[in-house]
Image 1 (cartoon, helix red, strand yellow):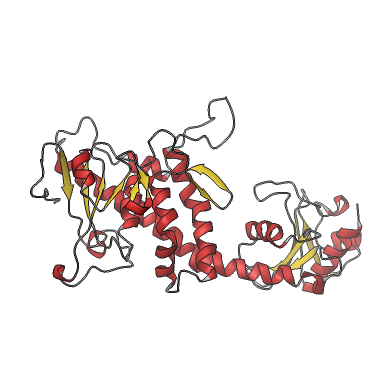
Image 2: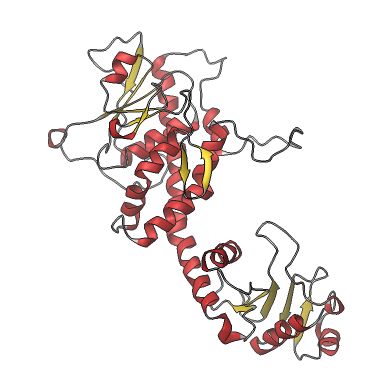
Length: 369
């Protein structure tokens, strides 16, 4: 239950005292990062405000994230629109009409608000985006167990915004994903913002009490928070190591072939998006045309044509047309390269039984129209 705060007008607002993060999420099976102080007397509990009534993903996630910080660790959440009550709180999210990080006010609904994340991102921020902008590095540094000035913190700070947070901001601010005046071809109600929205009390729910509403908001905080932490942990555990591998391979590509257009992936990992981003960051010239790697069964080597963009099927330079659709001995004969296995009909990928054979295929493909 979320007990009402004492000393406040209960008709105007409701508040709840979320259990410690570890306890809040015990039913989800997801481990939490931080623990509350062992005794309430050890620290003064802060209070973070957001509006009552129907809730959205941004304030649910924002409340979850801000409680992961040292300043607002395990803070009480107060849900109200009463300006007098909001003025007394330590932080306010998504209500109040003020954005002032020096006063820990993080609303985005006021006229003239156009704050963006920066770093090349121009999407208008929601309350979650504001909390992430000011506290995201601290949260990530704690997850990585490093100082905030560690270079990996900055990399993950940007990557998590791009792959997770920006969509929350855009949906909440009503920003279309595509520039078009035509209606969408299908409805997608499976994204996080939509799933959080479905946790609001249904109009046919007989119990429309403030206590019931607060219980729903707590579930929304846990849902949004779990996905945020999953994103941070994925980027720390998988994305960052893969980026390091691709960077090293990109730096060493001229030792593979003097053209610099063939890269060998020394350990298979997700590489496509990293390659495009690193080529831009490193101002790589020329760009890579083919990537060679051993397949996951360790029995063949693949030579894959790099796409023109991460989300496009067209390749920068497909494997030669005369090879496409051929297999085994027939392909080896036409290509004049032993141990060939196949080349896809579209020319985006081929295979060879040996590393030397795959490298020969890539080199030959560079020289053929």
